[in-house]
Image (cartoon, rainbow, N blue to C red; front, side, top):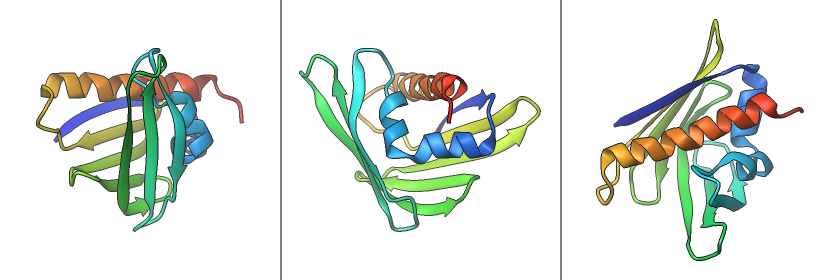
Length: 136
């Protein structure tokens, strides 16, 4: 598994809400400015499904990122299986600096692992920036 992480200066409640609410996912779920998430749905429960449409801002590329939840412990753990069978585990834990988000995922076999790690880390960094600047 590949692991990325970030510590976010916010409450656990805020981190969980902005990670899981579709209207917020659409605001932070991109690795670079030339991508965005124009659609997100999320049924956050064991057996529930999520689907995020990720698209280039110029409209030339798009794909759906989707999966089924296998474990949800509000507000500390989310596990899911992607449509291609790969597994993801996200741990939310409080520490002295704020909320540490640790995301581990099975790599796919098309792109180099370093590229995948950098992409997932960029999305997590974008989440951190969004949360720390968002008001609820």
